[in-house]
Amino acid sequence: MALVRKFGKPDLFITMTCNPEWKEITDNLKEVQQPQDRPDLTTRVFRAKLQDLKNQIITKSIFRVVAAFVYMVKFQKRGLPHMHMLIILRQDSKINGPENFNYYVSAELPNKDKNPDLHNFVMKNMMHGPCGDLNKNNSSMIAGRCKSNYPHQFCQSTTQGKYGYPIYRRRNNGQIVDIRKAKLNNQWVVTHNSYLLLMYDCHVNVEVCSGLAVFKYLCKYIYKGHDKVVVHIASNNCDTVVGEIKKFQVARWDSAQEALWRIFEFDLNEISPAVISLALHLPNKQCITFSRNQNLENVMQHELTSKTMLTEFFHLFSINSKARSCL
Image (cartoon, rainbow, N blue to C red):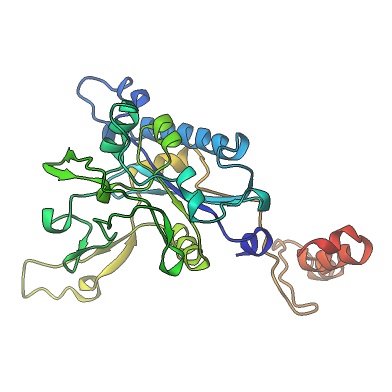
């Protein structure tokens, strides 16, 4: 929220998921191994791709100049890591108006004759479902309808929808592909950026954030915390009193991928520019730390005891006019 107050609302939301068929992974597997057998390998490769994605967006400015960004790395329960990133563009680089959305985001199947590689990557990585009437047992189905609202309606041009969600161009141009035993068209295409999809050959979902309601949802989405699992322990013997153990226990789920990510000490999140939280306290009511062998009188009389980040922030204001521009 501090970044939004300073730089304005986010412009782009990107989700990138590890592809177990990346050449860097498959070339280093033994004959009997599957990608899930090498969490160390998939973790390192995904992290390298993530670092390159950051370089493309932040340094090479493929979406124009970035003012601020934040990303979080998460892990599916089956293991593969994925990343969510919010990007705020500089004021002179903002995406203004639905007519400019198509330069950054596509929701259509590419022409197979003109862009065969891009067409294949969209078919492989960016087609949703099928769900709904085509497959009522799909995992995206909740209460008889798709939670992601697929299939979307055809639309001749990109427009601004309700609550800040864009309605992307999905023309009824007759393109149909066979995906998972179903015939799908532009109504089933997940929004993507063609350049990133060609470069990384994985699921790279790119969305335009065109309203504050979208931002509030996405901010909670990327900071929702670790995966959880609910455990219920019961006894086969009906006469045994299990007691408190019988109750459902909420636990944290850590996959092998996340364990390796932490062992390698890779960053799980990053925010730029950095936001530092200053703890508030009443006068002379700040928290202090000291070792058990220290003399309390000496601790109380020490000059550093009376200083905190908050008091020094105010002190800097009083002696430095440039610092007064900081929030």
